[in-house]
Image (tube, rainbow, N blue to C red):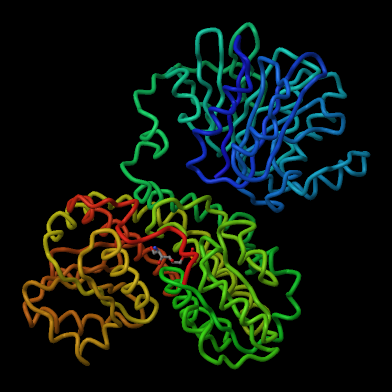
Length: 611
Ligand code: M6R
């Protein structure tokens, strides 16, 4: 995710900004930049694609003198990771410079208006409109903070923002709306950051901005305003964390942080994409191939690991609602067999990193054979994102823990959106479209409700973490989730775990069930619930310890086990988004109790760029 740092004080700003940016590196980024205010109307800016060390090389021994400045690490959303798209961005005259985290949803509309007024844009970003909007407001002789407030009132979306202006060379303005921002208060100096790790070595005294608040910093000190330009009283708080803890935002591991980030990650994946009133999904990344998509009559999904399992859920969604015959294949298999493809077949790659070697090779093979290629990718500008004909980004920020968690639920959400998109091109009714759109929109809130049960799941993990063998069972939409639950458990806790479609148990695996072999049964109240109950009975009859996951309000299952996890009700195709979260938490806590290196499990890498 992008990172922000700003400085106003008695020291040279550039080294402090660079140090802050380095401390934000752990968040992941693809480009970076900074701007320093030297004197009235003189601001110097440097930008670079890639690491901060590249930016340092660019600055070299050029004199970057000034006591006010802002810096940014960018993780591309709108526009590729290029130098032009890197922050800080400026107005037409290069007097106003700003860094921004978040997304300006109505940027295109604002950009069109500004262009009509003669503004010239240099980047493809949504952020740049803010610099031009502020410029336009400053023409009305407003102070910088007033111009920022007026501009923000016109923008819709999320922002953490730091602005400096050559017109007012002793001032820095910061603002927040749904994107974290804090102001560090030092002795005669102020630092702004999106994340305390950027400033914690300078000061531990901070003011956390709330949504709709604007910090105005100048030689006289710090004032906090609201969007009505009225002063707000704020408390200075003390941070008592070390750097590592700050980067994990207080969580013990990135995996846990990312599990708990899922409600906001899903919000980001869904933002601007669900049109509930019309029962449609708006997916800008595939609009260019909309007509071609109408003609496809077969879809092949290729992916690896967790992304492959998302594809399996996608297969069920796409066949049930869009009526498109869909196959899911391990990318590592697809590339070596002789796939039969034609012009009406589309290949869909799913990959968090966008760099997985097998998925990339499968994509290249399909392209060679003339198939249309699509991607669901998280990392903007990654190889798979660049090489597919069209695609949908997850927009969930970097996933750092090796075990994929928030990427998986986001992939499921995006697959649901794609299903809605394709289904509405075909036979799905307007009313059914509305129903699905409405349910998809509920996902961030419902995942929050599942996470509220985390202490119960922790207790279950404590009770069962000494067992060495687990089955995860599910049916239909929750069959791939059973496999994902087993994958998560073995990956981080090294416990032997196998995931099965519950109907397969009788065909062999049930031979292993006994008092030392735990079964985790996924039994939400859906169309296959009663079949699952029969399978659970078979486990109980063989004295197998049982943990069950079901829908809130289901009392029947209490007769079979006391270890029950409840998830809220939703439509069947979306239950996997909710049912997987307890399994992620269970794996995490089991690994914690077994003292495993959770964020870096042995033998595993985050991005598998070799075969
Ligand atoms: O970056 P990708 O989504 O292409 O990665 C695919 C798999 O390597 C990945 O999902 C892996 O299985 C995870 N470690 C699972 O938690």
